[in-house]
Image (cartoon, rainbow, N blue to C red; front, side, top):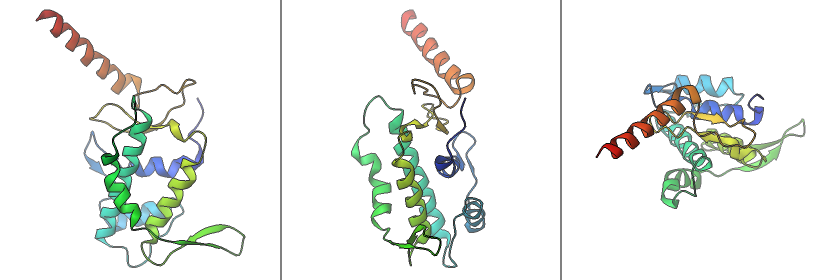
Length: 179
C-alpha cells in the first residue's frame, strides 16, 4: 500500500472533518476552523465569522459530491453541483508572486475560500485525482484514496462498509427469492 499523496491530504482531512456515520462535526465554530487552517498551513483573517464556518461546510460537502462521482457508475446530474457552483461563483482572487518566487492567491475578501479553491484546483490537475472517492455506503461517505491497482474500491473499508453492504444485498436477494 502506498500512502495518500501529500497534495490530497488537506482535502481528505477537510472532507472527513464531518463524520456522517457518527454525526460528529470537527469544525463546528470559528476556533476549530482556525485550528484546522493553521494545521494545514493556511490562514484565516480577522473577519472570519460564523457565516464563513457555514461556507467552509458547504465547500466541504461540495468536494464530497465531486468525489462521489469518482465512485459512481456514471456522471452525476448537474444539479448536485449547484451548491458548490454557487459558492465558487462568489470567490474572486488574483495571483501574485511572493519574495521566494512562489505563486500565491492574493485576495481581499473570503481569502479562506480562495485558499481552499487553490487546493482543489491543484489537486484536480493531478493524474491520480480520480482515486479520491467517497464510500458508497450512504451512512458512511468517508472520503478515501483508492490505492487499488485497478482503482475499483467502492468502500472506505471492505471489513466494515463493504461487508455490511454485501450482507444487505445478500439478505435482499434471499427475501426476493422467498416471495
